[in-house]
Length: 272
Image 1 (cartoon, rainbow, N blue to C red):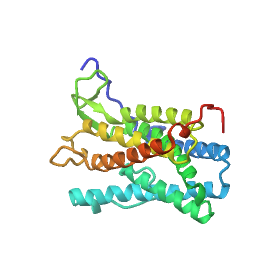
Image 2: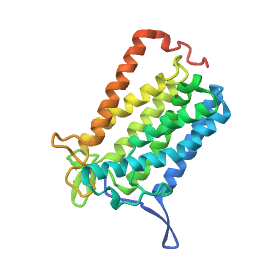
Image 3: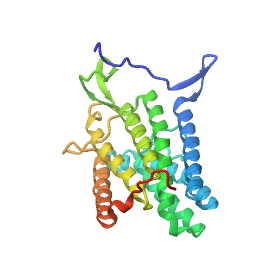
């Protein structure tokens, strides 16, 4: 217990002793601003259509909120038969009842929508690369908000970086995802100019996210009221989904590597 991280939380921002805004909402907003900056910087570098960029980004705001909540409600209805206990409100930006896998679906749909409307489908993979990289930046701030709320408490552990939680030391899943997401963003940001084939960056992001989400879910709690549903084999629904995604994206990457080889990467990282 001596080596555990002391439990602390910051769910609300107070003014004169009164709660005025949830901390998670602040980090959600910061994440969106950073995502937009990433989107605009990369769109300029790749000379992407400005109208398409804004349609993809703005439609993504709506679609992400819709699908991440839709996946939450549907999964709860299928697994617990209690999905309709929760209010389906896509305007509830501070609502933590969301499923991240819905974000990936929404990103793909936003890219398809934006490129179809502006007739930019020939560059659809460039928009997918940029959009997913922006989403990674957003996820980093999402997880800071999750950490302050401690809504992703894991299993009991004896590791020195565990979090004290009602007399027990447990894994803090959000902290792990903060570190993994930061590492992913730094990696793809440094790699983005070296890749010659559109879509490869998106595949790398999906491989990373699916592999580590599948792995980290083994540390999620299965004995707390807020625990994720576990099947009889011990896997969560997310692990099933991300496991399938990992197999598919890994196969695509290996195919591309076999087809293009070293041509997928530039030797001169300063090249556009």
